[in-house]
Image 1 (cartoon, helix red, strand yellow):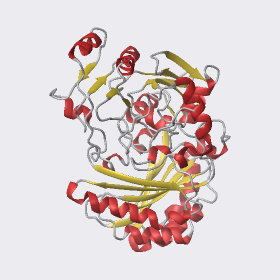
Image 2 (spheres, rainbow, N blue to C red):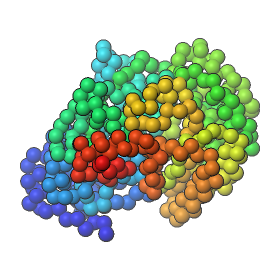
Image 3 (cartoon, rainbow, N blue to C red):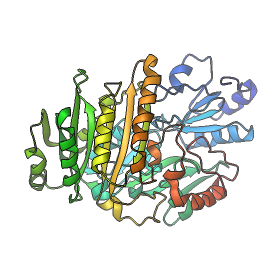
Image 4 (cartoon, rainbow, N blue to C red):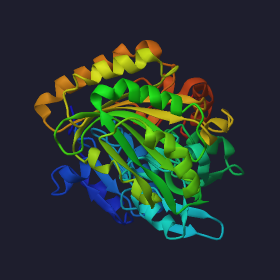
Length: 454
């Protein structure tokens, strides 16, 4: 039963003598707001929320919990759909207040603390005309996205967010603060890039940046009765794309609230604008779109394009898997399923995987997904709790009709709370378990998609 953990007043008073952030317990005025995460379907009641202002606070919170045998969870941006960043009857180590961010334009690197979001990160790097691969939704935290791999618009040109990680500051389960990189604790550095939050609390991230100020991007949307033609066109389009062009196709609802269903292709070209016009001409000339909004924009802007589609507090239930291919059967079954979708906020997306992200050696990081192809993502989003059962049932049913086309690989950041993690970590799991044994032998960081120590 949740809400039964009572933190001893004396122990909390002792912690308070050094802790510089906020310690929030059930009954405090700010407790209900502090325990919420982005997904409104998640409703957990921690025994203590430790809102940290710096690494020293994280050390204190870890030692406080581990010395008393209290379960731990770690929250960065709180955006993960599974809600694993909060925990019933445990201590939430909340990095949200840790917003430190320094950009070094001479070395083209950025140092960011674990509470930074991609909106905040992109804003600061853009001042210097620099960027790195970040999330598709700007309210996502840098921490969780990077530790899970980090899909984003620039992965065709620059790889995943994890591929651009230079070093990380980590607080281990013993409360030790270490720096990890290719040269220092390389085993842990390998595991952090794709293995999620299983190994410690990452309080600081150093990223490699790339020159980028403007992109050419936007979307083209067609009537739903043309969805088959649109998705087949998308399949053909993605057979030979330049690295600079990131794209995905989706079955979506009109943004005007009418509930009208559409078939859309979304693009972000991070190369020369004149070349972008050439590379995108086939798309802009195709069919008779209802909406065609593609043009130059600052890179941070394209990362806000879908923010309104995923508002904080909305109810979310997702399913995802890499596909063996985008064949006619997948297209037809997706369209048939989407026709009966119960929520006007839900989408089915096909993310194209090509370019630099597929050229990173599969053993270079703990991200095993390096094959060209497509990732299927069903994002069910709704606001009325009375329709929860219908939305979850539809998502499971639609996902189930496509199961025969799955490649047996899943992206860990898209796993929902009831998804097994085996297909996310794949053959890396044994090596990850060895790293887990070294840095967290007592499995203190187990609230995430868990890797047990070997």
